[in-house]
Length: 168
Image 1 (cartoon, rainbow, N blue to C red):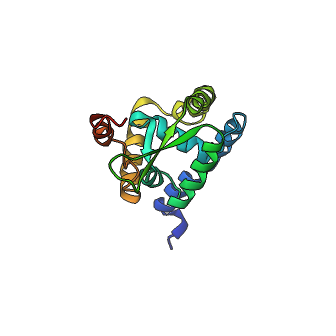
Image 2 (image 1 turned 90 degrees about the horizontal axis):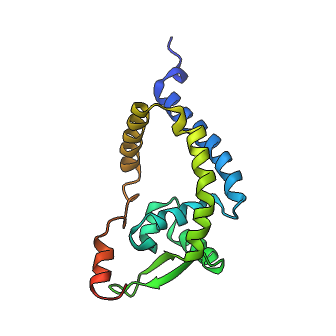
């Protein structure tokens, strides 16, 4: 009789959970040293990696694990801390952008070296280049299947439209 728990599908998901938990614990401790929660770090990083260091609030929610109201609460808190600001969307009065401030970019610059050391030591450094490329490909495929909105608003197209209207 075959043991259902020896199924490689269960092993794959179990290993993913274990790796995520281990990395999350290391990241949380390092982020705390810089006054950021993991959610705040995710938000500020996604914004900093987006055209114009900004995303529409709805796109930010789609890219994160947060609901629209959850994003609003995080952005409110980060705005009070001076890390983000809101900017009205010139094309849609119902929308607004979350934008990283200079202080937010500085906090990110202070946080990233330690964050990258943890990534190298405990994640990417454990893999040779071919294994890392295969893992990235596999993770993108899974991400795109289970979270198709994960890259919402990350193209330059909308930002270029804003710049073209002179409302940047």
